Length: 535
Image (cartoon, rainbow, N blue to C red; front, side, top):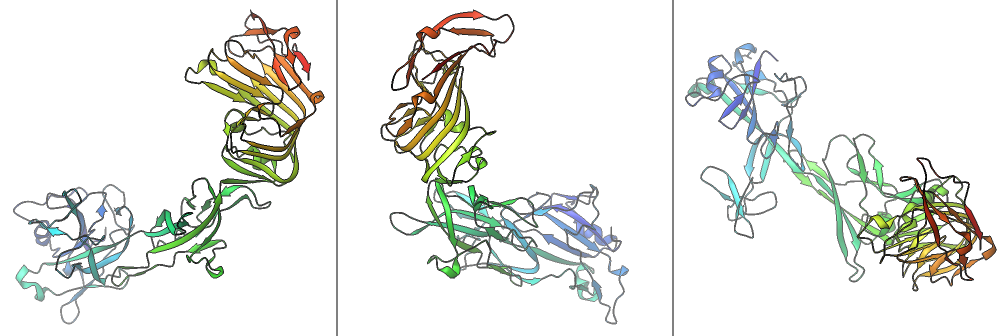
């Protein structure tokens, strides 16, 4: 601790922490106690609407002994003050002094502040609401329900203190009435965090409507005052999903450009007219500033005008672009042929309802496709239906277009259900809604593997290709194979399939019966023994 001053953290006038020191007595103030020891100069750091050590009403107080300074010819001493957040300060706990205010940043410390008032002389808060002062000096406003809400007034500041160059001047002769004691208060000047507001055009009115905002603490010496527009995940191929996150270079964490639900970013502008000059091509720094002399915000809100297109879009140029992005409502633009060998088809597609688009401008081929479906809905009493395939259920309004699937293996594992439950399975789709748009689709060299597959006691439909509206799908029946396996991972029970009862009609619909259930003695079934059928 600097020998020329001591500092105290004081919570109101009820208690004081001299990092293990004293409390404010009723008969003698802390300033009076310190003055008896020669520390006649008191400097109070008032956090205003902020807090020290997260304590409401706490202040930091420094005390100086003028006799330890060399006076000038007039008997005046010059005292340098230390920022209350200076790391050189020593505390009994070893922890530095903390100062904060939620949603705001500190501009500086000021020697003067005045309450902001309206023309009627009433105090205003930072939101411009008229305040009433209570007898104890606190302020409140009345909300729409008539309730008194305690708050702090807004202030106008002056006398910015520079801890590097400013000095406190003290002359004992000027403070004879107070027995040489001098007290100075420095007030924390706060401003609300600066804001980026994001707007999109209303489809009906054409007006710009705010849909999101982000904010940051101004002047922290970092790049958190900057935003970056979204870009495609795979920048080399301009494909994948749209990436909205960018890592700050000089600040912890990431910036995330706010997305519009079920839409995809295309462009952003700083002018609502969306002129070429206002287009953001990569990043944009907030244009606001601070008048530190008066602790005044200058243009604290920066508006960003965002253009989007319908749907969560994915541009698919690689196997990763597809297999890492399973979105049942996504719009997938296939940019070329894909080889998925070594990859797993998106699990989200296999048993859920697909409501998006999966299409190419011209015909593309996806080969070496592998998908595994585990859906035992007999254990879920709330389930009324289940579907499985490369696409579980293709909903009305969904689109699959200009795609050829070759060398497809779909494994359906433990698919059983109770009476009254509906289910549909197929290699391409469990079911295709009659109003779905499936055109220019073909499948070839398909293997449909069935593991412990039971269709009893329920309304099931199993098709080698798909159930429902299959008019838009071409396939060669001779290239479809169904394999029936005996397997159960948990109980070591196995179903024996009777090959004489399995029938596949000309539309690919499959019917068969299941043989007796036999128990395996604590060992897995022999997976090499299976029944195979060609369609």
